[in-house]
Length: 451
Image (cartoon, rainbow, N blue to C red):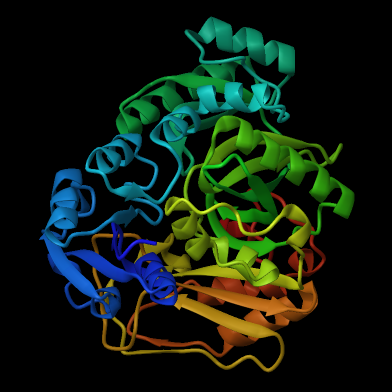
């Protein structure tokens, strides 16, 4: 096992990795920008080092400076968390070239699955079902029109290097496809430096379901069941839960087995997530992408399986074989997570940096409450980074108890100093459609006007 591990990230996920390091007896190294010097993750790490000014491009995205910090602090491994450099194959390769352990999959796999067209091809070869659409990247609008005619409208034009809904446009007919083609390519070029796009059939009222996988470097892979992430605004997830009420036990186990087998065939190592859209009519699951990192929503999987995913990532990166088999993994209860952001939903979700004067939750009376927070009272939220200040997770013996636990926490939340999304998320949890498990991407239960 490693003696020292550097965390190439900040905030809530840095604190989460620090806890895993503490449990494994590893010294943690926090890198931080000048703006983050007083943040809790810096104080909680065994060691800390400043890597530059506030802007992420001059600190958390500065690969050379992070590697210099690793050398200076005698780190043996680097955990990238999520966001920033977590899916950057070049950085992963640079880490390994410095003879440091990379807590993540091989750089070649990050590259393969990071580009949507190559990821779809690899998933198809590995036996995962694909959304009907183009076989690869499209060269011109005429190709797009021909594919759309074959699969039927509506369709989506999607950026090959895309993410977060950028470079994605819907078209309901041929005239709309021309406009969608131009807009998606322009946004993709501006956001990712590449105008490459492909086309998929648009699945109206689809659900977003993803499977968690763990794989070691010895060819072993298991799935840890699924999460549902259908509650989104502009392709940004607001709430996640595990397991999904949309899958039968047989469907869950069958697709989970296919995901684990596909991951092993790809040479995947570590924690990864294979994402699907579920057709509301047929119930079929269709592959859309693989995230080659830890997901923000990983706690709901931890809560229902009892498996610490961050510790697992580190142990696998240290060369350990998986210490359990698929038959050992069981679902215990139900878990739901909300992403608590310092944003104002009534003002177009405008980020709200500022000083947090108070921050507390009403204790759970039933179930179990978990709070993974980036902040504490007295901490100033800087304006330079993501606005998520905490993840709040409710666990219950069943879904109703999980909902009740989380609603109690959010309704009893005290945050003074900044507006948050807690009220919106409490509305979602109380909405009849959500309580009934009637979910679909693009509609926010209880507040459809904000979708």
